[in-house]
Image (cartoon, rainbow, N blue to C red; front, top):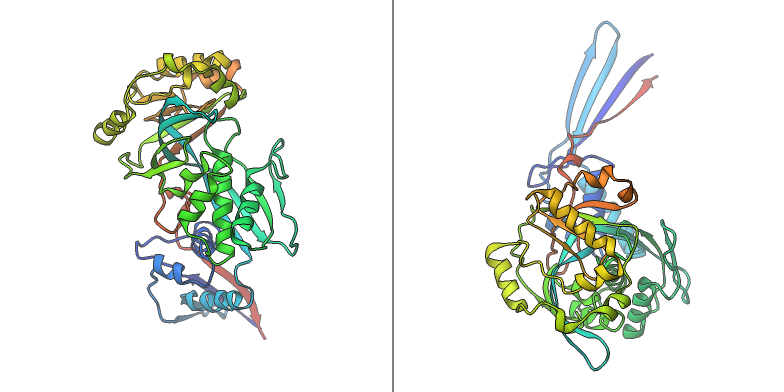
Length: 408
């Protein structure tokens, strides 16, 4: 009885000659491209062009062991396509995993108090690479959504913006899809990063995919303002000048290079947005024209003098340790950061220009429980949702599968 060893090398070469790994980056490329659209694999084809290779069979034998080796190299694209198309024909879209990124306010001016009790603002919002992942599955129920998450303290009922967004979508469209949702939370709450708003926008996008895109992006953006002021921003392309309560969104070309790193540092304590606005004093706020800040950023980039946040003084009253943290980051950075500022109403301090936090954050007992993350600026193409950036370190060499069996 002899043995035969079969080595099957899956060659999936994209047009940019990236060799993804089975089970890691190749899997994510496939699932992201396929799952971000409702039917078939046309989007997959548009984004990844494969070079077809013929079947190549090389036989070799070892005279000392009588062992035969057969190496088969082939491209399984056609098999994947047939399988995926068959699933789509029979079931349509049943599951979807989406990236839900957060944002920072590069500058935030409060320009007035409104009659409805809100404040008018003018701010440069920008999406960054830190985000949650949300998994949606169609539920057999026609009456209730079910939400789970990986962290404690997140409401799982109608108080959660994800559930509010799904209810809003059904109300506006008359659809009756309900979902099982799992929220893999990475963005801290009470951070001024818009994590909950992003989750709501992502849920609206997902519900629309499951329904065959019966609503336009403009519809989703307008509807979302009914449940949150920051939610409409996420239907921009990722960089926008926002006014009104934040719901008036003007897409702008991102003038900030995507390779500029940043570090996010958030103490365990959160800032109450309501309390911060309660302490805000308009007459003591900055008088700089927000459009001049926008112009300066577009011409010279991010610097300390353009990263104005009118909510810093009241936030520092609510949480004095936050002011001390910002001051220490600036002092310890010794010029490594182009700008250090608070995002939104706090309590995240952002250092743009370096992904590394200062050493004192590691050394001081006071900061042992702070949240830290590096990030970068990202945007999204038209008619696609945001995609989590993939580190180059996740892309490896061509994988190889092997199995051995006996020939009888």
